[in-house]
Image 1 (cartoon, rainbow, N blue to C red):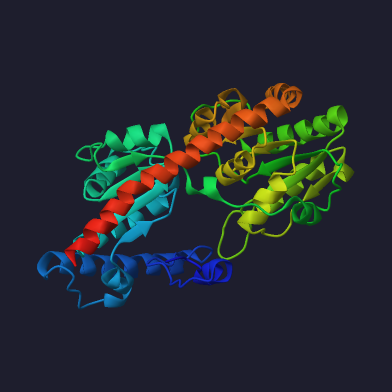
Image 2: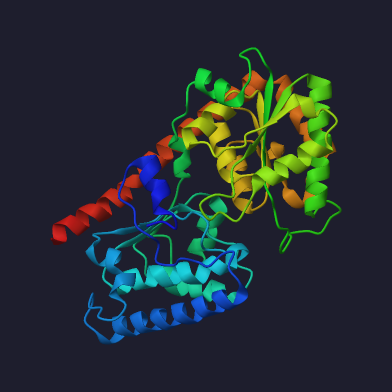
Length: 385
């Protein structure tokens, strides 16, 4: 199930259907209010039927849950749904999980970030729903600790592992260089940027605003060109296509416009396939990443990486690879720190490539082993029938 099934059909050639909730993003306020009222009505009616009818019996609004009714098991691959930084998603996601369980289907969360919870109400709601799930995979230590700490959840059904993107294949170097428009002997530094809304900052500093992020990144990039003679490639990962509301391309352009060495930079303007993005990131000497999956793909290609953390998940990931000294929260990001971190990596690039390679190998083994619990759940389900 997906908000835009066509994207999955095109990329993976698999059957895909629309998500239960088709959010009216970008619509007028009146349309959004009408959508919310209608949605709350059918949500309430379906929930009531799961209480008063036999398990799996739905008469009204059956089309909303049809895909769950024929499924043997339901797996959520939405890695960023259960936290208060994305408050609009958490209630609808938890409702879906609860309905799946009330319909008698096994419900599994694939490796995801859980938390932070800023409100006691959402923490209580998460605990109430997650305790009913069959298996919960977290992708970092803090998410594991947060989930196990929710009342009634416990450790038996929670497995801490790695993000599945750690196994993403990559395009070969020749294809990647062609996509970038770079020469084989060119020193490349990649920068993953993002259009970030500073909400509920962990700290308030002179840098905890979007204007500062753009300014500091431009100054940093100029210094990389000047000191190291590199070509800077900006990698947006969220593009304004297929309903995505975030536009990292605009951010890359804003940073480029502030730079003195604009001619030594390029922006990847079109949405790449995951394998192509990893292949392009693999061409870098060092990557600076503000997006989670850009960071995973960069380190997955064994490239020394600096992270700018917009949520704790990115910080946790970097620490798990022994790269904590090259990780800074976005509210504190500044060019002086970044240049010092870059210089430390630059002088020992070969050493850090080897260290990252070993860390990624361990993560891949950890993820493969952790799937044994999922296999056991599927086997139990098969034995029932």
